[in-house]
Length: 186
Image (cartoon, rainbow, N blue to C red):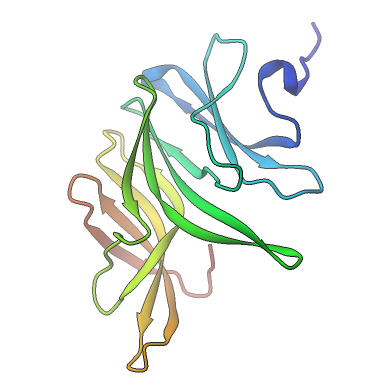
């Protein structure tokens, strides 16, 4: 038996596997893809039923918008991911966090959980973004994640705050800081 080429199993040219997840309720294999070529390409997420021959993208993304830091629930047919928009500046690409999303695997529908302007951090923080998803609860009611929290000073100049491990109640969108991640960047 020969190993099929990536193209034959639905993995697009210029990409390779980065993370593999499994969602038991939907019997789906989820693969996060990362650019492996010389040119930058945003991360993508593909999915397939365990017996299906090919992976399919979870949705169609704009060319410079990523789908990354994917986690799934072991008890519900849902996955969660972060989205970031990229733009080229000189010889590098800069990312801008767009939001945290859920994807219903059975219905193939996406929902925004929080966007770049709707993430509410507890005081003294004025804003920030979600940098990494760590895990989802079994019933998909909460996420453990890493947030970068920002504080604005009196002169309205934003100063980098710090990274925190946090939990988010997905019903209320309430964010609770668990621990500051000292000396760690995600």
